[in-house]
Amino acid sequence: MNFEEISGIQTNTGKKILIYGQEGVGKSTLAGQFPNPIFIDCEGSTTMMNVKRLPQPESWKMLCDETDFILESKKYQSVVVDTFDWAERLALEELCQEHKVNGIEGFGYGKGWQYESEKIGKYLDKLDKLISAGINVILLCHAITKKMTLPEDIAEYDHWELKLGSKTTNKIAPLLKEWSDMTLFLAFRTNIVSVSNDGKKNKATNVERVMYTTKTAWWDAKNRFGLPEVLPLNYDSIARIFQPIAEQMIAQAKEQGIPVQNQEESISDFVPIGTESFDGLPKSLVDLMQKSNVYPSQIEFVSSEIFKYFPKDMKLQNYPADYFEYLVNDWQNVFNAIQAECKDYLPFE
Image (cartoon, rainbow, N blue to C red; front, side, top):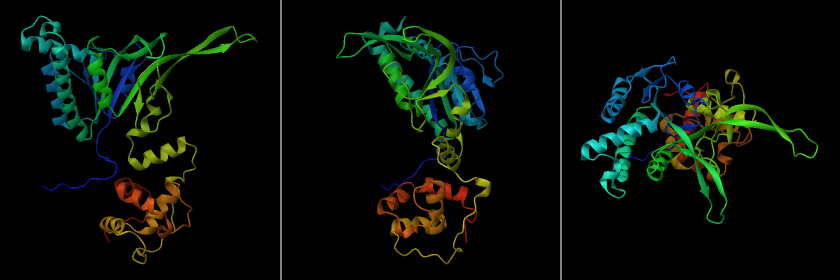
């Protein structure tokens, strides 16, 4: 059996986003700003919002059918399930009907929750088909606090987590978080200032809405996009993630304070195509370059001017060996940057 090797960042797939937060913080409002979204409104919470939505699903099968419809229609860039904890109710209702029990506890110890985990897992497989088709999937969920204790400490503290059935939290919540590319916790943050010289008296000045992108002891969050730990709660804070890969790299460089040449003024002094030498470069890299009609000067340009890895006048043959490995392993990412930034790039000679 033969398999084709795939390397680099997959740029034609959607993103898996899990968003949960405090009541009224603005989960649906944020989701409504994603690229061309369609809502599957499981709880009827978007009726006062000017967004596109499908009929509120009355059963788990209807939810699955609407998901299939979105994949077949090819009309939307994002789908929002609002909210997943209400969708979970539909899954539990169907399980009870299928097995003719009055409630999830009727399955016997732990069996019902395992069946639900399997059903949710199959639905995530269905959502993965949307991801493969280039459609972003945003799952919204309410949040609750739970008392937690550390193994080495007897003190309790509050931990924010997904509001799923109390006995499914240990199964479904991890499943969703593992599945997601990014889990955001949305919250109201109260800003406190000291009003006394000794710092013992404080007052609240204002409340702001924020997004947390990194896990702490008090909430679960993650991201695979190099985001700051806390961001203002607005779509502009994460918009670069949904831009073309070259634009993402430029936006991230600006966030980090790295000077980036204006794309409109991007002019490179390349050696004329056809006169450049591939001598001294590894065959694996040369094969990729020739297949894509890429020349050393173009890699030098994106490596120095866009990625900011090496001096502008440094020749590709003098780059370190481990960078050649990076170029080969992450070729699609590099190639996308060349197509976007090199004005003299031609797909064919």
